[in-house]
Length: 366
Ligand SMILES: *Cc1c(COP(=O)(O)O)cnc(C)c1O
Image (cartoon, protein in one colour):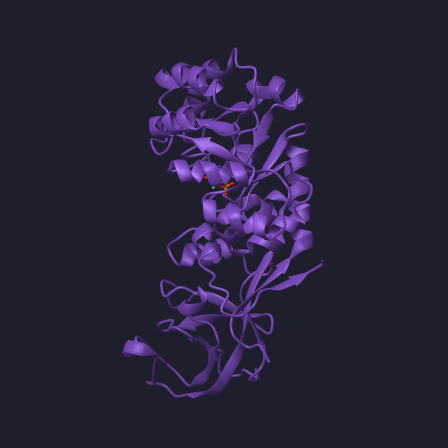
């Protein structure tokens, strides 16, 4: 029997989330972001589930290679682009669209002799991570026109998950003049952008109506809220992943007994100790502190003591009647990963991408 921590993925949830996202931005084209093993949901199965999107986006050439080797025919964009001439050659061979964010990448493309790829020029409108400075964009556009089969412009928000942060409006304001007389496709919004900044993006309505505006949802596709303090369900999204494991041991614990490595938790009174077959080796991170909830037979009980590599301890309570083999939900529909991330002092992105899939994931609603 499979008893270690495993991800159960509901494909119907991913399809539902895609429909919801599309209904928020009618006419927009969808670049579905499936980097980092589709946020831990499985690169190829998710790619196959997303047949209603216009393009798939990944962060690494290796991910694009896996998609093509796995028989995915859909358009693929490599957000980070090529980091060598060989990368360009392989990307063109695999029919991959290339992000361009640096002067060096433009020079390689100018020197490249083969067929021209579709290029997404990334403009840095204030995140100060990847991208060409707006003052250099005209030059970059002129040069890339000679070596791209189709040139598109994009930028990325740094702070869209915070509705009160003026940075997002500033970034939009810096991007708009650059696309004013641009005749190609453009792309700005990630999940937080498209779910939280619809009004601020209204100046792009013409692009949207003409089918020239691309959205780039990642997290929302998997049913998770990008906004701190809000859950996917608040936004009409359905979490696609349930991360679950099995109860491996149930036994009495007496007042004063300490639990786990370092004995960091001590029983104040007699209770029942449950040991769950999930640990940081599965992606149930060691940053999960005492008190973090799990569901045992649908009931919330707290993690106690340190999470170890293969195991975690929970306080089942003195009256518990749970048994070895019972299901334990670590996060999912009834226990939002947003809440668990908050407990662990991190964000849902990190918990989801951290799932190691020591046990094979289970896919439902094929
Ligand atoms: C990861 C990424 C996205 C998706 O972001 P979400 O917050 O998951 O929606 C979009 N665009 C770029 C450039 C990214 O790197």
